[in-house]
Length: 488
Ligand code: GLC
Image (cartoon, rainbow, N blue to C red; front, side, top):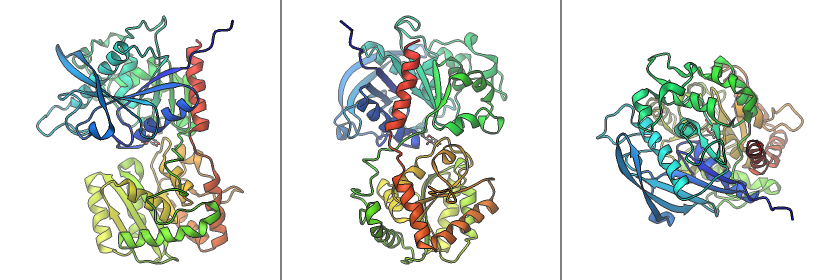
């Protein structure tokens, strides 16, 4: 009799998961890809730190174990809580440890601690604790799937189940090459690692005692991927590789680009409870009610002909905020409006606050992330701006497309792969090449002129709304990647 294939067991280990612990798109991916994999018959589980702000009772989490983790010459008790991903029957494990994980913000230590290597220690501890949890609770995953520099060190830890026998394989997803974790011999020793196995290619240029754990994990993972085909090519160049292009080139054969998806049930203009007037492709005429609602809500001048541009973003250099600021200071028309939701860099916040103060009615800025307001912007704006300097994938443009809001983006990374230029037959949006204020203003002007011709604009909206950016296809690609290394 033919033996039935057992479902693929995958342990996701990550620093963020939406909606409980979210700074960027990483959280959305970790919160939604496992669900799509479960729909394909896999058995995923997700493991994240329990940060201080996470209210375990609200998410129905129950304690299932306590483990003692040897770290830095001491033993630390870590409590393990079990819950589920939101709207999915995928187990979510949270590791609580007051000193290393459960105090301070996700990427900020408590004010009372002043240790410049705290974050690296936090995530080294987390990797070790996650490894212990996987072993002790006998998950026996076929795949341990880690994300970005924070959990990349898990690829370096010896697999207690015997890596090359029936042990699990390591998959590393690069969501953003821009952040890295450097360690010296002393820091590596905290988790029992030595520098002996580190490649000279991972040595820091600034301090030769330090080595890049992310880079070393790129060399050692069984398979690596990034979140769009174009970014997968870009990071092999010195312009985008941030110094890691040399290690990436060594792994080029095992580096894939798999586009992110979005949770299309959660982001659904037809049933979204948080927008003023739900709508579909067939009832696009309802969308302007959302525009008026957004204008009213944010104190913008209520006007249908105004060209309302929405922005939902982290305020970081990556996101091209200086181009946005330039465009707000030099709008291509008096009829332009900007609705910005974003937090991050304090200087950017200050500039945006003062711009919105000086141009109230035309520019509205909100610095506190609010998922309901975000959806009102996706639904109410005419266009959505993403002039990112670089963009591994980008999720906001996918949500905008779904809500019939036309994206205007820098032609890079995942933006290149997901937005079809307005001049093409199935055009959906506007792309500009050359990261410069002049180019951005030019494309804004071109978009505004299209906006003035309603049937042309509507064609872009409908093309965007009919594009499929659900996780289905990409989850299938992840599954193929997993299967290809498990079979080896
Ligand atoms: C990072 C990238 C973004 C990507 C997200 C999820 O935030 O900057 O482009 O969409 O990760 O993969």
